[in-house]
Amino acid sequence: KEVTNINEGSYSDVNFNFRLFLEDNDATKVDKDTIEKNGTFYSLAKNKTYTMDGETLNTGDDGKFTLHHGQQAVFEEIADRKTKYILQEISVDQNRYDEFK
Picture 1 (spheres, rainbow, N blue to C red):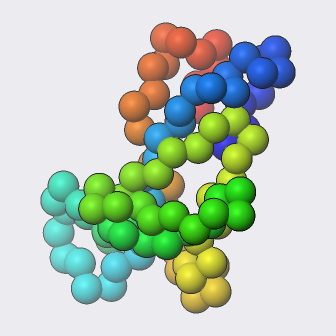
Picture 2: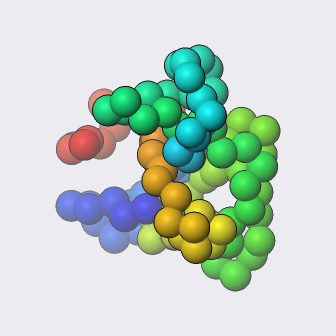
């Protein structure tokens, strides 16, 4: 996660929460764990392993993981298979930041 146009350190203690969705050729409808974009279905990546700052972690049953400014989560299994994915930033207070995209 990279926060731009800020005083360095201003957001170092802020949690930025994300949910990861992976392309799912078996999905046929949208529900609380499945989204659709351009005719392709993506399912929530529950209990997926990733590394961050040398530590191995999991997304959990809710598919959520948290980053701070400057951190990266690496999902090697997904990268190795060249899986299509959608990363959804959640719980963002749009009034707190000068610019939100």
